[in-house]
Length: 81
Image 1 (cartoon, rainbow, N blue to C red):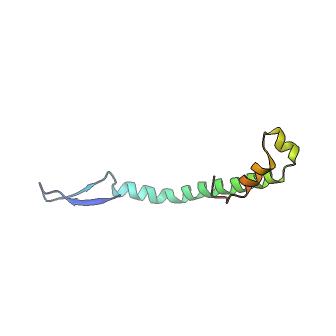
Image 2 (spheres, rainbow, N blue to C red):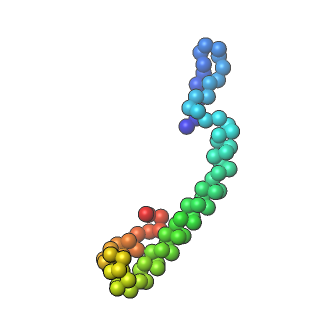
Image 3 (cartoon, one colour):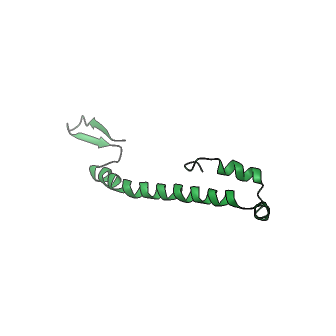
């Protein structure tokens, strides 16, 4: 958070909170990369859940999973881990 407070000792603006304009610009330029990473995670999660849902019961048993656990996991929306 950027806070603008007036320094009463010398009358200058003191931007406290540790964020400079450069920090904010760097954060803004990092948004596309962060968005790409998030979308990639969501896509992989959805794909993994589709594959898990398609597995036969004996494969699930080998992994120590029940069909009920798979149904619970695969019913979640892609954005929820």
